[in-house]
Length: 251
Image (spheres, rainbow, N blue to C red):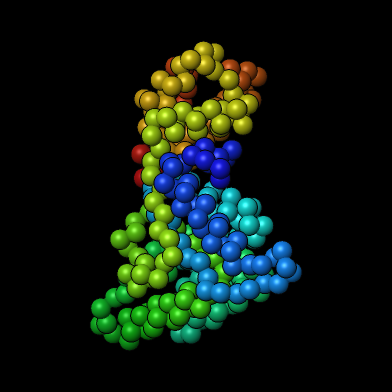
């Protein structure tokens, strides 16, 4: 992540700077040059922002940079209705990540790290005990833990107070969208009949990076069917419109 534009990820300068700081903090935790690992307090981060803004890809790139395996956690599947099972699942998860020096990535973290409820019955009381247990494990974890959410206001404040870094992933600007279009069109082997039209597309079509990638995948399928990977600006804008309509129907 050497600047606002990574070979895979396009972000604003502030977000890029914060991601670099996370990598630096993790690298500082180890004295690999001396063949000795020095353990200290772990690093935790909260990635917040709309879908398609690069949260998951950023975690993957951090893992590649650090040379560590990323354990992507489906929070909704980790929770059990049986008393004590959630804690067992959490303990096994944290223990495995620590043994293998891995990165814990809690995707859609709201399900597990959501705000504690007002105690009305024994179920609520137990749910709050689970949150307390998770707080303890997160604090004692000596590796890198990353939480991702679309709505940071849904996260229990007790967690956010313990987070090392909060990183906001914003929807891309027109200039950032232009860079994203260039990267993905090239990666998908798609060409524009008139490349000078690309800035117009980037300005008009206010999509996230993930949505641009989905549009380009659809264009690639069209290209394979017709045996021609060159499109005019009108065809690209129609593909964007079809994608947006399909998204609204599915929402």
